[in-house]
Image (cartoon, rainbow, N blue to C red; front, side):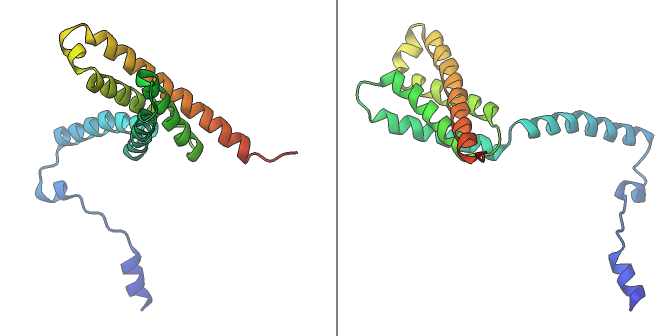
Length: 161
């Protein structure tokens, strides 16, 4: 019985390329270069931004913009305040730093909202400048909102001496 359990517990790895004879020095060098090039990039990007955190930041920014769009007389300022509020909420609820995700989400939402809100101006006149400023303002608002949300979270969760 003990021999059977040891056979089950053993980890067996099989190199399929070696079995069919297609593995050679050229193929192994190609596989190593693929792994090092894409592995380094993926490992760095994976640690900076994840799909889930980017989607969460995007949803928080969109919800903030939609909520602030109901406030009268706050057209462009409402968009920026909504992105900042979404970043604040995301910073308050997250225990990790997600500044890159908030900057990307704020830029996308700010640029998209300005582009959709001023579609004629963006297409006919010098809308590129307007959309560029909106992208920059959205990114800054998202990062600032996230910073203050994390700051409040840190203040609420630290122990008093």
